[in-house]
Image 1 (cartoon, rainbow, N blue to C red):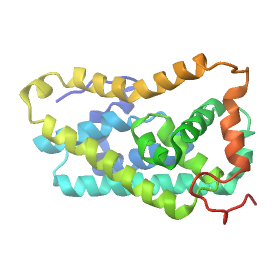
Image 2 (spheres, one colour; image 1 turned 60 degrees about the horizontal axis):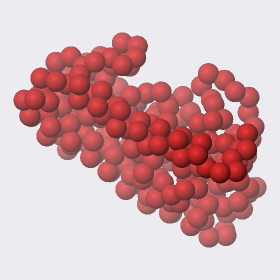
Image 3 (tube, rainbow, N blue to C red; image 1 turned 180 degrees about the horizontal axis):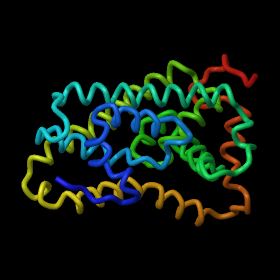
Image 4 (cartoon, one colour; image 1 turned 45 degrees about the horizontal axis):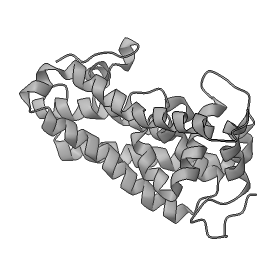
Length: 236
């Protein structure tokens, strides 16, 4: 069963799974969930393909419940690391120079997403590529209450990590899905990218938007606690 490589061959979900097995899935999910270097990794298509391959016993011999447990654990742990990184680094995160792996624009998008949705952004961001990588970091920078973050992180990890994998498992049993896996994976990617496109269009249409304002949400979050932070966590 071959899937469509939407980038380099080593980013193709089937290639990753066939080469590294469950360990590769865990590492990719962990990195994409909260490490700066993981924003380009194929999270959604990887999870969908994982469920599909489990359904057919190809490359993965582990039961679905165990695969889901590993995925959810990696997703939750990745966000935890991202949160702790954001708390430790603080406002300097938004002032570091641009590089290939770090773009202030990506952090600002996550900050704007957080400002718009509040704590539930931890859950919603799971389904938005790039944003899901930087949202836990923004939560840490904004000193979000750790218990609140941990709760939403767990819910998001279960819904995204477990939900998308289970969806791939059951849809993978449908003949049409098996025969058109390339088309399905393209659809998964497009659907996951759609919220980012919508947010960009909304931001451009907002009245009174000034040049350079895209970085404002992140800077604001660095200076004050996020919703649900109580008042116990002040910037150090």
